[in-house]
Image (tube, rainbow, N blue to C red):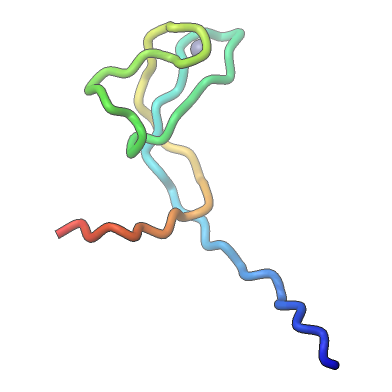
Length: 66
Ligand SMILES: [Zn+2]
């Protein structure tokens, strides 16, 4: 019997647009892709959010963008 253990796949990282919370005491942020409003509010503390970027593992997008 062979061990079928697959080596860990490397997940490529990419700079991803995100929204981050403006509240200094809060680490809330979300991917821009998951923000359903033009100006989302923090899901943790309901403060306003500012757009920025974060280096995150790339999401495999199963839906066509075209
Ligand atoms: Zn927050």
